[in-house]
Length: 574
DNA sequence: GCCGTTTTCGGCCCGACTGTTTTCAGTCG
Image 1 (cartoon, rainbow, N blue to C red):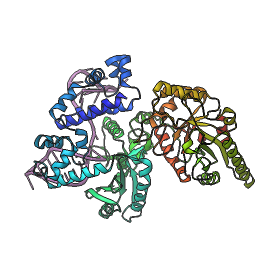
Image 2: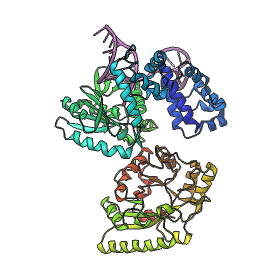
Image 3: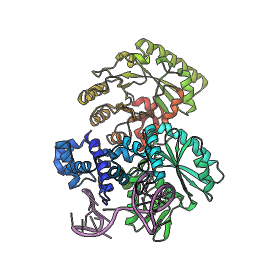
Image 4: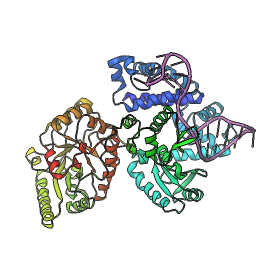
């Protein structure tokens, strides 16, 4: 999508402007970039429909930026940007991604040493040309070298599912320190973003020094970025950073609010404070020198006439307005899910037997579990053909009989994850599909189909009277593979019409639908189901990530069908 | 460069840490 290309240029524009000490414009360009990334509609379409005037309706886009966008759409270039690029022809994005190097140092490095990219930077640092520059020094040079090494090792953002367990481990250790009165995870991890840049901890203590000492000596620390009296920052050997900040008890709410972010949410919240003649910082909400609120997040928001909102919502995507109007959604909760309908058993080459999976589901407190083995088109996954599905169903019947005898209120459902073939047909005969409790279908092949055909393909599957759920509806793999080309608005409309349920796949690398699409689906009146796509029984814990994504997409209980008890769920199936 | 129930000018979020500079700029979050 062209939005991303233009956003990238605007981000770089902001850095170039900062380089020249231009005030406020960098902020404007970044804001425009963020909004371009956020809107779902292609700017090329917006421009086609309404010209520059329509572009100006995008938040953060005014006369000048709209003209830049127009220029890019027409010529593929932006002169204003080219001029900067010509003056300082460097790979700015790469160079400032090195910790400790920003736009201003990048400019000096180019003008004095001709450094244009990471390679030049590394070479000059190694031959000690940097230390003697005005404003630099030996330590800065060393930090730059180390920064480059780390950059090569880590690709930036990490999956929520990889980071959360590691963060929780450290969290437990911190909690057990006698100097720590209270500790919380903050930042994007508290907001449960799908990818995490670094982990932020916030603690209360009268005596922070021993905590700082402990923190920088945690096992696996390979670099201490900073260590002060109330703040420290480390890099772990896994390649990601952790920060800790210690604040006094009386500021904890303000600090937690501040360090949870997002940055955009905080900027808006601070503006609301300013409008009321107040000042909000991580130390509290102040009227002049007098502290108005600070102990809890609730106090802060309340003093601003806002309702407290779950961290998952804090992205400046309308939650502030909703909070001011006291109209926040009542999000689905982490304990609300009654069953998982995307689980693969050993019938299709998965690891665990249906019996083991059922046991695991009971441990999770579920009322039902749907077995959704792959079907025959997926030979590599040992997909089941019609005969095997029928055999497998018999095993499930037996198991359910046993549960009944044992007096357990638990049921295993007969399902499958069938394949949507190129023409939109399903790889299993309708009469066999009809024997199942539910049918899930997904795209597992030919992912690069053009948009119109892909939309047609999924559309036809949704019209199949046996297909109840579409699994991982956009096919993305985070950091690996983009969503496939598909007209989601058309899909949402038809899902509502046909009563087809769209999946929120909880697998940490999928999270598909993603938050923004969940919100669009909800607004279109589409029902969704949060599943784990489990291939090994311990993956059933991924449910947490899917629920988090649903909450980030403003989903409420009634939007999610596996919040429902078994009977109501089965009625929702076609 | 954007924005506006304090509107077309005058605002734009705020603070900690580091390194090198002797009073603070740059960077980061």
